[in-house]
Amino acid sequence: MSDKTLKLGKNGARRIAGVALAAMLAAAPLATTSPGFAESSGGMLKALFGGDKNKAVSVEGVKAPTLESGFADLVERVMPAVVSIEVELEPGALHKGKRFFRRFGGDLDKLPPELRRFFKDFLERFGGLDRFGMPQPGPMPRFRGRAMGSGFFISSDGYVVTNHHVIARAAKIWVKTHDGKRYRARLLGSDKKTDLALLKVDAKGKSFHYVQFAEKEPRVGEWVIAVGNPFGFGGTVTAGIISAKGRYIGAGPYDDFLQIDAAINRGNSGGPTFNMKGRVVGVNTAIFSPTGGSVGIGFAIPADVAKKIITELKEKGHVVRGWLGVHIQQVDKEMAEGLGLEEPYGAIVAKVMPDAPAEKGGIRVGDVILEVNGKKVKNPRHLAMMIADIDPGQVAKITILRDGKRQTLEVKIGRMPSDDEMARISGAEESVSPAELGLSLKPAPDGEGVVITHVDPASRAAEKGLRPGDVILEVAGVKVSSPADFSRAIAKARKKGRKAVLLLVRSADGDQRFVALPLKKRN
Image 1 (tube, one colour):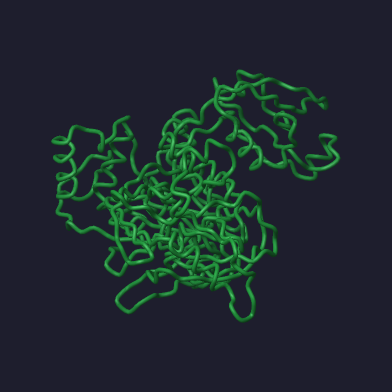
Image 2 (cartoon, helix red, strand yellow; image 1 turned 60 degrees about the horizontal axis):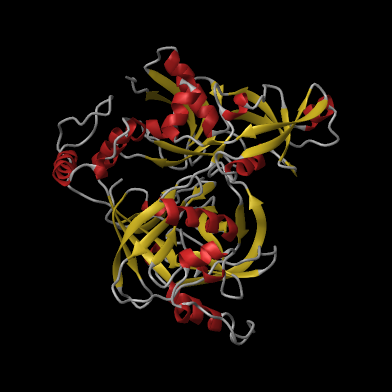
């Protein structure tokens, strides 16, 4: 989730009307851009994120908020642990060049220093890549954009939590503490699927104030405060309540957000939401906004999710998830009646990938997955999260409904493939990503079309006038309601040999138009 809410220019912030789901916020470009865990669950977490206990934020003795004092005592305790994140972005050609290397199993940053410097210099001096992903001549300004966000220390020795989208294209990262001091930070790892990242500030002899994640889930209606760096105004505090839990907003496969009404805006991404005990209950990540600014609907990654992901990033630098290898869909009311289920739950298998754990374990198309290790499956999204939480190599007991009868299969869970591996496994007809065309998409809140949340300024999509806030209603005459629908329609057009695909687009002001989007030719 990159900058999708407002554009900042010479005259200040400009609203983009019609953006219903505005993923933040936070990596907000500056005006210069172009286009303690000590008390968390488990001894292992204590060992990983322990530190100087004297630096852990304590709220012991802090009185409950009153009309007179408000949240002032609490804010004084937690504020020193919250930081502003400043990012220098890689030039577009360098970013694309790294993707080109990864495409063939390489890593530009792991080349020998001399070779790495040569390639980086080459990519910065010559703009653009051709249709095969190779650099092509053409001057490109040696300009680097900047972005900003928020974060917070979770240990006295300098571990910082923020959002993945804040640092996604970072060439350099700085952390600015509440006392105004600025430190260089390095990225230890990030997870795009949950939009979390872990940074490390190495400051010899320095011990930082840090905060701890909450051990208990918050209740709807609890008071919370959000602290962060909205629009570059560091050290900003807003207050509200937990409005809802378990929100799905189409941000990723593991959406399970807290909804809060404390005002959060661009620049708040990666910042903490605290309960009245000074514990972090969520990591601010996105907002819902028809205006581009805060309308009192914000979303935060729950503490229990963040703890698991951050632990893996600390240990491995990446997240390993379990994988079943099936395409699944919702069991609706009519399906449930036809299957003999008392209520609609579980997930019906629409496709089984060849040689995947599901196929090896005996799962077939048409099976309804009802339980995993004795726990009821609520819906496809719930199943995806349950499988992802199982360590690869473990055997899971999966209860299915087949031909009206329940049976339990033992399936050895696999490791979730990378995006590139998944594309190869799924087949060319399903491997087209919106990002390949320079677009980031989210489902429209009303279910009609997909909202463009980001456009790569160097893409043909940008040349054709597509902008954040536009809604793609149809692709080649086919209605779409999700990024997956968009990908399938594009892939189908490409398979037919089309050089361009016709999109029906509704702009932010309500006007509709057709846009012919050129399709890249594949190797």
